Image (cartoon, rainbow, N blue to C red; front, top):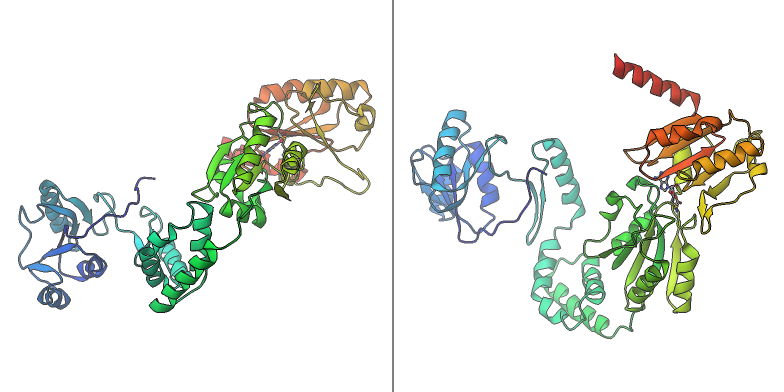
Length: 460
Ligand code: SAH
């Protein structure tokens, strides 16, 4: 982020603009919405500027800019539509100590003015750091349509009512009150005021709300693979307790006020004990919070879900499961393959490389059969172990094995190998992200061909 958005208090502060034409008018129309003391310096001001000066909405200095004109100014705009003159006045204003903007000259400006959606006191500022003005305009248009023109009125009346709302306890209850209030579109000040009084009465006398727990699948990493339900749960969460594997882009989607707590564990090998996590979940829910327990992939797949459900049940805390896309689904999609295929395999196994006792025991003989497909979770460290077991039980050394790291993320990597070469290839590949091992699947030939083509292209 090269430009940090802030909202600047301009009430009573000097804002100076040099210029008198179209560019100056465009900026002045925005600046006139503020309570700044506006000064325009121009030897040839447009008629509108003269009218505004006559109406005392700004001060007009009818000459070219001179040193000292921008003294004590918070902001300065160079809007002469003449590069040489803009550079001259900008240098003067800079020396006077003002923050300088040169209209249509991003590189030499100290600040830029965003596209604005104005529902004062609700203001939305949209900036693209000059990268995509067309996009900024499209977003503005979208928001203009989405945000009711009455929003400003409602917010002003709401603001004056804030102290009364302190009768409700801080946190979830106050939030529920305000989201109720803003759920309706009210165009009349008196109606809005009555609505506030009625709602406050209703919320003050509402029965105690119980907390609850959503056990939510965050999917494999790509935020677009979140379910709408997961998205909604994150939007409404009071507390989010997340596993280490949950992608940061997904945590970004949680409600800004939500308390974010790391459960710091990765599938197997907890760094916060399961008991401590259970305790965290239950205590927040019992305090009345909407807890989102966020797990990577699908929470029902190697997610230690049952321990947490049992903890909720034991404390009488309500819970629901919000399923997610498991990493095997994302991984196999990246290979361009199916998990099951007529004539090849009529079933697929999701197995773990580890269990509580160490390397997991499986029906190696069955897994060694031709056409078998298995998605092996937490299989990186255990690769040499199951490679040995499978070969010992008669698996074909040429059985395709594909390892996919960071499935669905930008950092996704695929290692296509065979059972006999799985190790040391996997160790040599140095995968340090979460990885899934597919036994019995190779990336579809077309994908491999495309990759090869890309590699050749890159080499040329
Ligand atoms: N509930 C999760 C699995 C948790 S166990 C799910 O449904 O996907 C943790 C293991 O999942 C990791 O060791 C790795 O094998 C796998 N995994 C999770 N996210 C992954 C990803 N983006 N790419 C590849 N494997 C992943």
